[in-house]
Length: 301
Image (cartoon, rainbow, N blue to C red):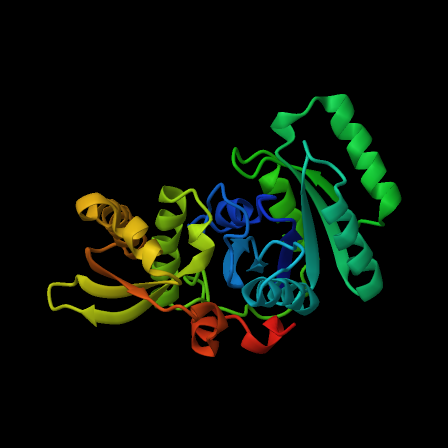
């Protein structure tokens, strides 16, 4: 039986459930999942195996109307991921339906033309069956999708069907990654993403989009554990106080949760040390974008 391998891009509006689906498909947490929108900045590739097929997922940032350089770079990365893929899966939220944002994405897909596009209607547990069927019909009239899947990425409904279909659709050819690899994002970046997720969940204000986390040190220890030093960059002095919290409680709590998750992911003990630094212009620094795997020039107005 011949092997198959190919790239699949998950696209959609922010919070459509792309990261949740990726993590469910791959079986490990590789893309930051929070209830806040715009949390995926980097094109993380998760690798799923289904029979003789290797499916390489490009988890793109949510497509939205960009305002700042960072936003513009994220949207450019999302469309870049779609252009590189063999199959595009457009995810929409069942309870939100055909929004202006989805309409804009469909228009862009039509203009770009090219490969196969499947529709995944997510969060189907939030709507009644008649509304779901009407939405499916409306969307398939609006755009010619190869297939339509009704799923709940969070609960797992319909996910196996989607993965099996993708496995049969990716091109024949050798596998692109070693069998035991689940993401081509360096561990340093995955660890930074995990810390940023904990910060985003803890701080519900606008602040998380004004911060970034970088892994500055990674030291393998003789006892098999690893020491990880990370810096959290914020844009203003006032943000530093919010991050630290009263008597350092916030940063301690975030560090504990991130350390536990990183340790579980690595399968060994991790010692995590966090520092907070103020860099007023980090949103305009080329180096910060490189750390996030984004193209600084894509953010130019």
